[in-house]
Image 1 (spheres, rainbow, N blue to C red):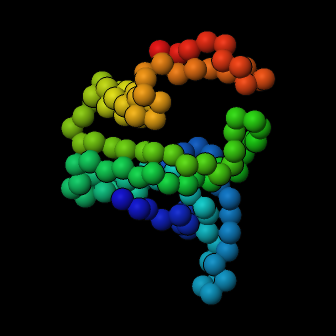
Image 2: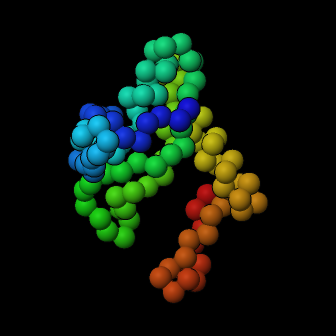
Length: 120
């Protein structure tokens, strides 16, 4: 699914949104902080499984590990419990690592770029 990037109300996460203005309609809008509410509406509307890979914008702190603009993958599955969602997430991430690196082991480098350990 592709959900709106701008909305007249912000929601889906407890983060401060970036605010913009639609000049043609003289309407204040917020950039989304998460696609959560729209995806949940699609599930309530009858789609059993939905996901979106897309940009989110959070007007909060910024450092080496946090960027105000980032891409996320968010998904919902009707009738699933958190055990099933955790299993699906683990399979997605481990499968991606295996596909990209050829192994389930990921090398970890220090600040000089030297591999210091691996993560299984």
